[in-house]
Length: 379
Image 1 (tube, rainbow, N blue to C red):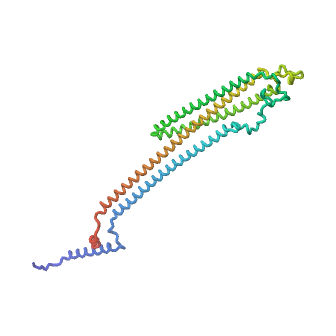
Image 2 (image 1 turned 45 degrees about the horizontal axis):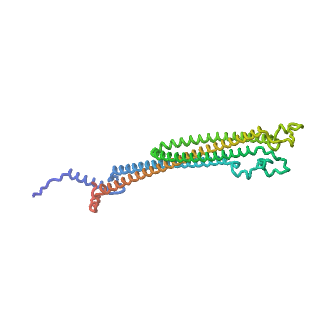
Image 3 (image 1 turned 90 degrees about the vertical axis):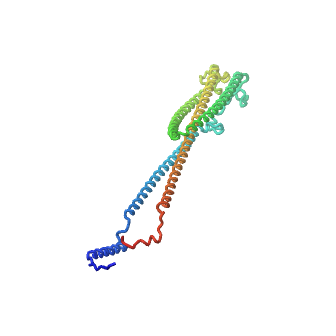
């Protein structure tokens, strides 16, 4: 080859020198950590920041949704607990009211042992012709004056037959009511099994039924209370009138007013002419006794009806409590199912994210030779 002495191109030399100076200045700016302003992927960093903010916002929204659901479930649980407590208080108050109104001391069988009015209700001086208290000097019984022995025995036999018949009828009625109650319970249990698929609708109907039953029960209880007070007042007046009438027409005062009329006034009698009460007076006493028996029977029927109504109300309240408990259990199962589904979804998303990092992001691991290529030039 031939070596040519060509003149130096000053422009080219100047251009090369300018590029060399710019490269040195660029390296001083890039390799100096205090003044370096380039060399960072700003877009990637901003994208990472935005992704981080988006993730934080989604996490915050998810936490808020969980908090709202938790507060709602707590309120529902608190409402159910308050309803159960209120129902227990109402049942306890109803039992106390029943005891105060229908289990009074004077209605007990042994009340006659500690009755404060026992002396007022004591037997008179003579209750029958065979009374051992009536001795020769009692002037309460005379030989040959027992005229009602046969009629008295007939009345006693009739009363015994009537009481036995009433006991048999009452026993049959109780057995029939028990059979009817068992049949009704079986039918209601089958009905509850069929209606188990409609819990939401059944809850509303049960609540309305409980409210209506409570209102009816309160109204019936108020009417029963007022009626019982009226009957007690009427019974007291009848007892007072009967007591006055018995004193006026009893065995102690007179036997036959037409024969024992005294010359000193109609309010006095002649002892040796007194022959006992008249048939009209005896008939009036028997009528009063019959009325008292009918009144006692009516009171028994009213008490039986009230007990049946109370049993029905208690059965409705028990069924309502069972329905609420079943609904609460169903609601808990549904919540657990939703939470399990959400946890499974989170697990699948986490596994997919880990697989993406392992198979897509972290597939090309850098080596030492790769790291030596950096910081050698500004380009």
